[in-house]
Image 1 (tube, rainbow, N blue to C red):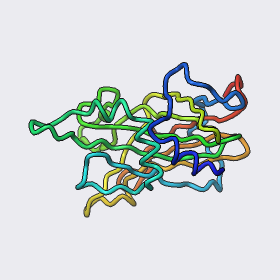
Image 2 (image 1 turned 90 degrees about the horizontal axis):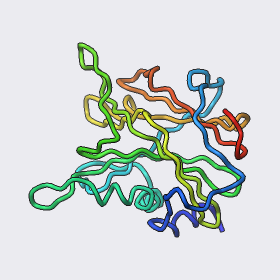
Image 3 (image 1 turned 90 degrees about the vertical axis):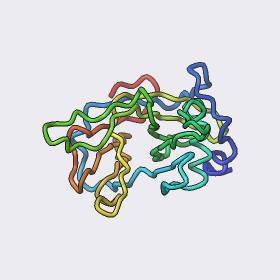
Image 4 (image 1 turned 180 degrees about the vertical axis):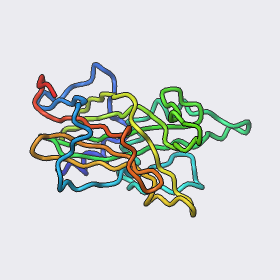
Amino acid sequence: MTVTTVLRRIGAAIVLAASAITLPAVSVAQTANANRPPAGLKWEWMQVVVFNGPNFESTGSEADRRVLEGIWQKELQAARTEKDGTRFPSFTLVGRAPIRNGQLVFTMYNSAGYEPCEPAPNGRDANQIYVTCPLRAVKISREGRSFAQDFPAYCMLFLDSQSNPRERNHVEYAIDDRSGIVYFRTIQFGKQVPECNRSIKVGAEGGKS
């Protein structure tokens, strides 16, 4: 059975409580190497999946959507509603990395009034358009077992308009197979934002990074 098949099946059944069954062969930890990614890495965009927002485009797959419905189930149900009862849109970013016996899904969430996210510290020109939100890393085994861990203050950006297309405003990630580090960077107005560089390490349980 492939990892993709498992992800499609478990969907909303993913368990995110701290008491969930862990994957003992794999640990995830934030690193201090975010500004030193090795040359030659393959950078990929984090995909956008929008809930309750028919006027906004999603770039993620239906398999992504089903998995994210489980990962962000609590937040999606708690999203603010308008006077007519319609929920405000919820925005998520998602990426994936292979791990031993499964896959690591890393994702961010934001919606109107979502307190864990904060606006960027704008300067005099108010030229920063990203927000900072927790990154949730979810380890999912081929058997469907899962465990989630949150990392604070990751930059989230998914702007897509005629004047500011997604090509110039998005979050990218790259995986260094040799070190097990996943690097994240934010492209805003076509330029990298150095203060948004982040990284996490996937390695043996109990290892330091």
